[in-house]
Length: 251
Ligand code: PGA
Image 1 (cartoon, rainbow, N blue to C red):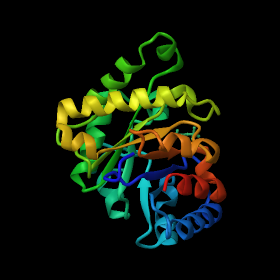
Image 2: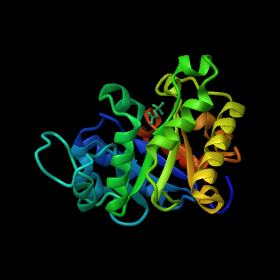
Image 3: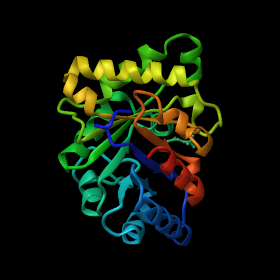
């Protein structure tokens, strides 16, 4: 990472957390984040956004969400719009997580439309991309990842409104991670593709997160890589101690 890019450590709680535990976790994270060099975000489930927003207060931790609908409002039972998330105090929204792509059949065009909705409400989209194990084994990683990047990022993406998270599908929740060399290779390819589309200034300023079994024991090595600017953390973001250790490793 370069000095120009402040590292970001974002916790993706997924479908975990009831009020009491979530509030306690968020308070612990906020206390730790106060002295952190890295920017810290937590993305609780929709049900907890209000409570977690209250628990973290204003300042040290960015409130995020895990998904949004593309439309402003209307007849979309069960969905939540970007306008609603901004109104609830969110500053970031994860879009295109592989679990959304798999569980809900989300494709690049939909992810891009979601990112546009996030941008239009002044929030930052954390756009997730990553290859499956079969794609990696087939030598297709860079093609898949750069293809998803091209399809999922709206025109007008910049370093303020967009963060890219590279999350190999086979590394999520499995305890397995690519080698440092493999991570850096993909991140460098992402940055090169960003430069080709948005120019060097945007590419050099945009933060690229690694995600997939990031934990206290491997965070420091991953974030030391030239093109890794923090992490999107699932399982390890649910324990204050582990998440705090990752925040420190990324600082
Ligand atoms: P994990 O999840 O850290 O539990 O592997 C990361 C993610 O899916 O964002």
